[in-house]
Structures are given as structure tokens and as C-alpha cells.
Length: 525
Ligand code: G4P
Image (cartoon, rainbow, N blue to C red; front, side, top):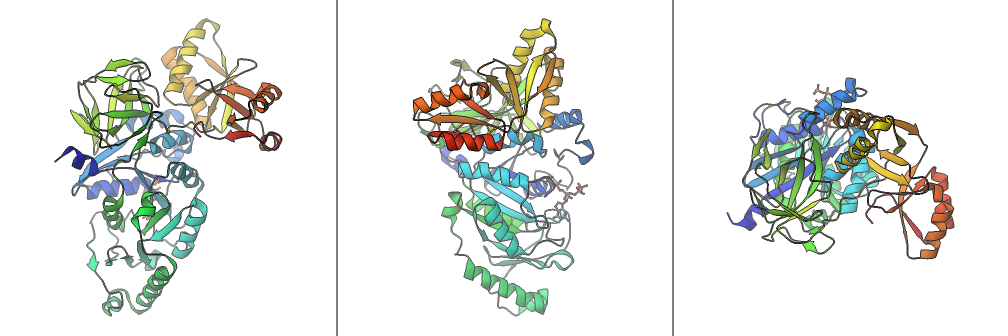
């Protein structure tokens, strides 16, 4: 196989959903199709069990286990599929945001009874920002849910993307009979079965009276009406708008019953993009370039306090990565080689000799890497597109053990490099603030500072609404603003100006009063 063919057969994506919509179940079923596992129930859910939501030690343990399932690679037909797992707990949403920067497309799972939920809405914002191609799987059709047409309208309105159904359910819940595949004109009849993969019936002409025999008169009639309506309302499916992130094909099924999953997978491998060109500060990098480039999108710390080792997850953006070859770590200018890079096949982590654009390699690390670092064959490049998002919770971090100031500083910086949370420094007072997306991170930070750095911290409350990165072409207005809001100005980790708004009202007033200043909720704009 040529180098280009290797890259073209790669499909790197993430499955995202609101907790409980069926992400773990769908992932498992896809692995089952790929032959990567043989029985259902084999994938360890990295979902935090409901009973353990307050027990963050348990959560960290589960996160530790989830290294193995961080990336699940498998072969399906001629394709190499890489599924990037994302944490189920919303307090780790920042991890999920970053994972989305390393994928070439996304499958969104929606619970047919619940429709679009908050977490899905937030994650979709990131996809929209990056123009990531998105497919939707409406799950749990074996239960009573919302009307399929209403669900399509809801997805369009709530997720801000045009939709096009490519399969259509015949009834739902107790009366669920199957799905008609509009993309391939096949009919799949439903028999609840958690293990067996169903075979489709070719059904090119939906007016064939055979349909009555298979699903009964009323449902046959309803299906024909629905399909007529779909064809009237929606334009024929076109792959281009999908690839541009403007149109989401929609499939219906039941992941638990392995139903409708094959239709999704078959269409996915055919139309989902292979690695896409990636922007750097200097130029656009094409995946087909022979020279290796990649960036670190995730760092997984070892939970063993005696070995402060991590795994840095690198997305290969172009060319071929090889074991024991020297690459340039652009931020610190060092040449580095890796003797034990790991790849992830099914449930196993194994040392690999090479990886191609689209693949993820895990590099054992002892503190050389930060989130966003670039590796190249020698070129001076800096990948873009790993923005920080405004945290939702803030606390002052104070030293609780004056003898350990150095350890505390080091610990804070390393944890921030790992992407556990964000550090802001108040410009007027020099006080350090930590911003997170959930309460759990504060506990994680305190625990890890103590156990890995022997440093003790104390949290002091502060009530803030949002952190906004600010910019303006009007230097004078910017200076006036910074002076007036001096108490609320902070630096982010890169020394950039951030305005800490203490309420939505204050932010709105600031936006009204300073018309030439742009307030951004992400660090990249
Ligand atoms: P998540 O990763 O998105 O959080 O969801 P997960 O796959 O763990 O699924 C959440 C629950 O929904 C699970 O039940 C799962 O069995 C169920 N489920 C997934 N797909 C379907 C489906 O197509 N139909 C029906 N009826 N249920 C589905 P649970 O009771 O919370 O967990 P478990 O004990 O069954 O694992």
C-alpha cells in the first residue's frame, strides 16, 4: 500500500453525547463490527457510575484505567478506524473539547426520548467552530421516544446544523419494526438481539407490496408517506456540505440491540473524511506531506505518585511517524526520539514502529510536553486550534505551607501544562486564580499537589461569571478599559489580557461602553 493510500484509509473520529445517551454502547458495537472485540460488554465504560459522582478518587482511578480506551483503533473492511474516547463526566468537558481538536469527524449520539441535551449542545459549539463534519445517531428507538420529524427539527434548531435523514424508523418502542435505509435503499427488520449482526434486505422499490407482508399494512403505508415527505422536504443527500460541516446525515437505531449501527458504520467509512489539512501559525500542513508533523492534544498523568510519568497523546497530522527517529520539539528546540511509542489497537496498548497521519501515538514522557506542543521533522511550525475555553468556576489558590512555596509553584505549573485547569494571575495584585469547568477539578488539584508535589494549597472563594480574552484595534480604548477594570484584569498562561467579569450584567455593560473591544470566550479567535 502506498503512503497516500495508508492515509486515505484512515478515519479518526470521536463519539460525543450527553451522559447516558449510549456513547459507550455504540462504541462497543462498532468495535464488535470491526472484530476488535467478540462479545458485548467488553468495553469498560469510562463513564463515571452514578453512585460515584461525589467520589472523585474513584473517578481518577477510572480515568487511569481509561488510558487503554483513550483511543480505540481497529480495521473494518479496507479502513483503519481510530475512535477517540471522551470522558463522560461533564466536569471533564475541557478534556473533551481538546480531544475534538484531534479528530477529523464526529458522531453525535442522541437519546430519542430526551432529544438534544445540554452537554451535546456545548460540544456541538466546538464542532461548529472547527467546521468538523458531524453525523447524528438517534438511539434507543426500541423505547418510546419523540416523533422522528420533531427530533430532526430539534437537532436543526438546537445544534445549529442542517440535517438529512439517511435512515428512517418504522415505528418505535414496543412496536418498533426496523429502519429503512434511505442511503442504500435497504430494509432492516428489527429483532432484539444484543449480539448478532442483522442482515439487510435489498428493497429498491418502496412501493413493492412485499413491504406489507414484512411490516404490516399500517406501518407500510406510514413508511411510504414518511419517505415521500422526507423527499419533499429535504434535498437529496450531498456529501460536500457534510464535509464542510454544514449538513449532518441522521441515522436511527438502537445501539443496545446492535440495530441501525451497521448502516451508520457503512455510510461513515464511505463518506467521513480522511485526515484533513491542519492550520499552523506558519502555513497549512497537508496530511499527504512526507515529513512528519504532529501535536500534543492530551496528557495523561500516571496516578502512581512515585513515578511522575505521563503519556502525551500526539495526533499525527502529516507524513509518517517512526520509532527511534529524531524529531524536533518545537517549543524548546530539542531533538527527541522515542523508543517506546504506543499505539492503541482495540483494547490493547502496544509499541509501534510507525504511525501515519490520522493516527494517535502515545509518547511516554516525564514532563517535556505541554498541551499544544508541536513535533516536526525539523521545521519550525506551531499548530493552531487548541484554544482554552472560558472556565465556569473560579477560586483563588493560596499556599497553605509557607515552607513549600517552590513545590507549590512547580506543581501548579505542571498541572496546568497537563490541562487539568487554567491559571490566571490578577494583574493588580499578582494573586493566582484557578478556573475549571467543574467542582471536581479543585479537589483533584489539591490532592495531586499534596501527593505528587508535597505542597498544600487552600482555596479562597471568588465569584466570577466568565473569563474573556479581549482585543481591540483601538489601543487607547483598550488602555482605558484596562485601567478602569484594573482589579478585574488578569494574565492567562501565555501572558495575554483576560477580563474577569463578575456577572453577566457587568459584561454586558462593558460591551456596551467599549464598542471597539472584542470579548472572546475562547483564547483563539
Ligand atoms: P453513555 O456512554 O452515553 O453514558 O451511555 P451508555 O452507553 O453507558 O448507555 C446508557 C444506558 O442506556 C445504559 O443502561 C445502556 O444499556 C442503555 N442503552 C444504550 N443504548 C440503548 C438502546 O438502544 N436502547 C435501550 N433501551 N437502552 C440503551 P444502564 O442501565 O445505565 O447501564 P447498563 O447497566 O445497562 O450498562
